[in-house]
Length: 205
Image (tube, rainbow, N blue to C red; front, side, top):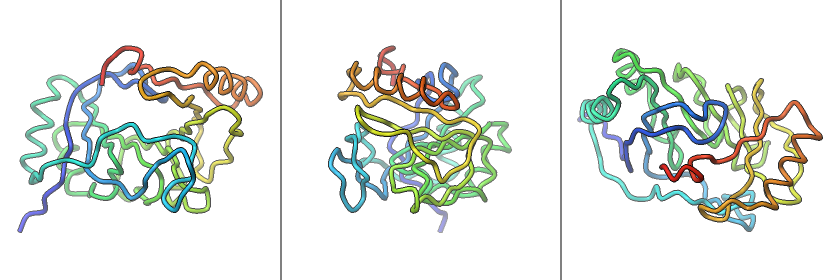
């Protein structure tokens, strides 16, 4: 029987955060996650912010169905971003090869708890939601951390030339105290870069 992928949504929009912000991409949101991000630390969360993404729901699609859906959404766009939830729970070489064969460039936004280095992706963004000793993806094109007031600059286990700090939001609203704090972190640590969730300001998904 052909493998199926449980998908929450597929949509084209402007990337609103990270090193590639401002670029047009097709987002493929996989259902499900292996962590539960909460403000308070817990067994599946280091704490610090609440997850604001609905990824629990979804439907099942075969490889051919999913690739067709992505092509329909893409138009002339050539970048696909796998996100979630945690996309590494389902993403496999079959899907990667099929989309590469269709002339797409492929990126992933992952919490780093699963090693994806064997998937031959074109861009890896690791945004750790676990303690550094539990990070399994140890190289990336960018590492990105959400930080709230009072939290220190991270010491990433994942190595990358592009290290970004993103101020925590209050739902869809910017938190000025967090922005000022993260601005200070970057000013004091200039190898880091500030990344704001612009898509929330632009009112796009």
